[in-house]
Image 1 (cartoon, rainbow, N blue to C red):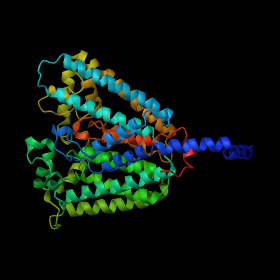
Image 2 (image 1 turned 135 degrees about the vertical axis):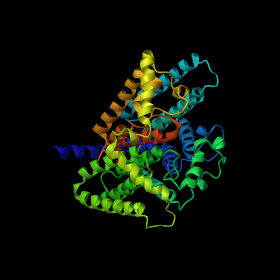
Image 3 (image 1 turned 90 degrees about the vertical axis):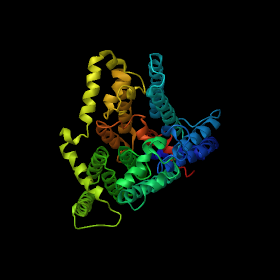
Image 4 (image 1 turned 60 degrees about the vertical axis):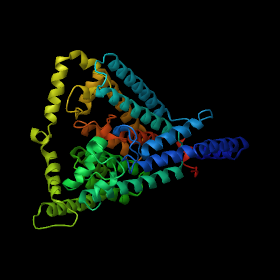
Length: 467
């Protein structure tokens, strides 16, 4: 029976009508070539997300990722009147939800503006910033979902992601050790805290001994989740192959997340690595042994008062202590003041029960607390700004993402498992919220989801060697 079906398919392919349809299909793929190259540029830009020009407020200083998004939008619009390659049904479902979230976010911010008393409130600018980022991220997801990924295109994306991951990891290790001066990375920006905002922390951190921020950003949580996303995207693009290289890159990512000083990020990569090892038991013993040797060696070097290495600074001895607090996360002393922040937000909501349902407005959170801090807990921050209704929509979005990834992502389901880990770690940070500290992470994540969900024409694309 199968032989008859294969023979019938082959006869159709060789027929005039089959060849005509094949030519049309190839033409549709070639039409998206420039859009694909724009996507490649976006992935390359994820290796250096520091601003390149100090234009406007520091939060919206453009970086290479912003230029890549602009290029993606322009190339997408150039083909808007032509017959576009269809997005998969999975991606179409997510696009609709993302557009609803964008519209409701704008509505929430407009509601906040309508009740505003102080015309200089910080929430005005923050809300506009968050909407601007959401528009970017929706465009990235939409455009990526329209790009047919042939075998050659997947191969190129894998090579780019591998290069970017290694580049980012090296930048983390070099800035952490003090070998590469952190201040040099922002030498083109205003050299003051008032002029550069938190980007000036690069200079202050260098004076204090160096930080493992690399070429990503001033927030160690962003640095760590960026590494997590890059390595999981790389493993997904490998499609079950190159297991040895995947393990090496995963080990490198573990080390870099450790030196980023982000406990949530290190927890995420540790969870993902554990799951990946369970799926590849033949390599588990080797990875555990190598990892143990490396971390024990680092611990000995960083804790011994008799050992001094060029480029290593005394401040780094606190990294071991900081990361070890993961084992005692319930201790309030290890929460870096988060327990007080959470209690303050909960007290506010208890006094204003109606705001628990509707929220105070998209972008308005920083108006209510002089510290200018977010809630440091994603679900709580969503409730603060968007209410329980907003949290329900957020949960529905990630339910759909996880459900679709579990059903359709191939091989090790790397994006699915990294999403689980990132959601768990978001109990202490705003991982999936468009706050300034997390830059383009949400864009990279949605781009990865769009890549991971297969197109309806996946079987045809496997035989195409077109870039």
